[in-house]
Amino acid sequence: MARTIAIGDIHGCLAAFDALLAAINPTSNDTIVTLGDYVDRGPNSKGVIDRLLELEQKVNLVPLRGNHEDMLLEVLSGSIAPYSWLNHGGVDTMDSYGFVGDLNCIPKEHLDFFDRLPNYFENKTHFCVHANYDEELSLDEQPLDLLRWTKISHRLPGPHVSGKRAIVGHTHDREGIIFEVPHLVCIDTYCYGGRWLTALDLDSGDVWQSTPNGELIRQPESI
Image 1 (spheres, helix red, strand yellow):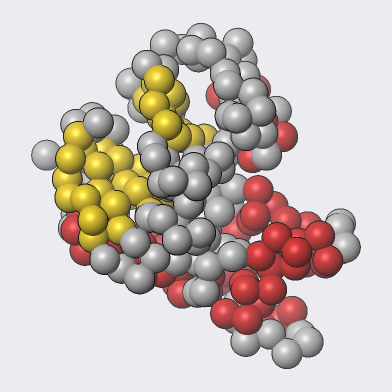
Image 2: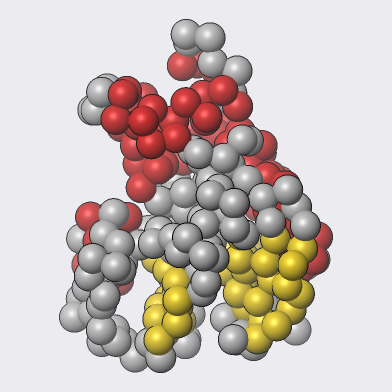
């Protein structure tokens, strides 16, 4: 049976990501939706992108774009000064790529991956975005600042006009608690801060969670 599984903000936590993938054991029939923020703060951003590129060859991968991918690309294009990104985890990302003063340390394959990340995913019952949404607008009309930057702690949206349930990341819970209301679930459970990475099966509600060092702590348990 084909599954659709969302995975929260990875932030360079490759061991946690690998543990979830091993537990989920996705097949070519499955859709894996990663909610963005693959880079920064955790120890192995480069390894996470390598793994996503590998996964793309095996399953239907929908890797959404987060605000940290935005910052990285804006620095590389010269749109923003490097310090604003470096202060938000960019140093960890550059370390993982072996940066010694030359931004060409990021492979073209990775840059191409960042450039083609979509803004949202939807099926008949759910939609996924990185951060937030305007409940009155269709997904292809959403402002980018809402999709990538606005925390649900700052603006909790109402039920979407489509009637579909929203799955989001970006707003981390420092205790690692999944935030759930009838129309929305947030699965950013603060992996880089010492809690866990969360995966959620959109149809069954099954949840898998792994610590930053790759210890599986929940497999599976429905919400």
